[in-house]
Length: 415
Ligand SMILES: [Zn+2]
Image (tube, rainbow, N blue to C red):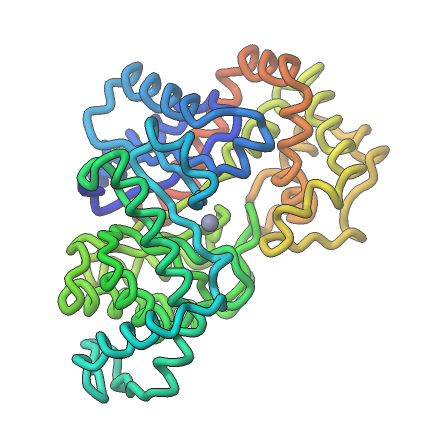
């Protein structure tokens, strides 16, 4: 199984927006850009919402059948490991092997020796087309990268072989992810990670490193855009080298776990993938859920009340809700409005504060991040929340579609 050149992770926490999401992808297809929709939902999200992976599969199949989407689509077992993958295996055809927790864990002496022996064929210097400085390979560097990443990639190998033993190697797409960590991986480190992935015989088609800068959930990129662009370009060139020399799948591409909405780096990524004619996987997740809350606010009445309640409850449980996302959010408490203040807001004020329009005077990234991690509150509202989603299906669907098409796809593919 081979993933198309362009693909986009369109997570959906409550599994009601499949059709609205697919409509956005279909709009891009009408403009000549075919993007493979990948319904991704992580183990963490399933646990918080108390849903099961087969629900994601049902949602995807239903949306595709209803809109008669004739191209590829996939269901991603997002951020799984050996302990959590089992329930995803029958229903998923994309597996994001999250081995971030194994970074900096020691590998065995025998594994380190085998890795170093396999690097001998690279010689002392590696020239990578497009990167001005050759990569100098030293004993110290090999020890360093093995110390950081070898155990993690070995773990990815274990997960891959397990899934392959149940599903058959040809029946799924493999992604290796190391993005949910504090320190970024440099292009040189990516080079060796790919070498290790090839040594483990993992046919990875997407790779998700941690890039430089902050990728906070649901808000724009925070960091040096120029440095990001330089490293992103080098990563693309390193992947190109790894495909040609390490025997990795020829369509191997970067997967950007953007936490959604990294608008300021979209044009940089777009220019680089166009320059080298490369593919990309852009994983967005929670912003569909945020569009649901925006849609409820816009709908007004009882729905607006529910949106306000989600905020006030999330505010009261901030620590608990933020804990699982500590590495990927930055909330300035002093800029969060009080629950009383929000209670007095109109539909428009609430929606404008939450909606991600950079530069809009009402937009508040602190409130947005808090609601982003506050979906547990909506999950606990149960029927009350999902029946509001059904009642205001059209307004919410429009918000979801507009978000994915206008704010993401248009920016990334110059539509
Ligand atoms: Zn991720």
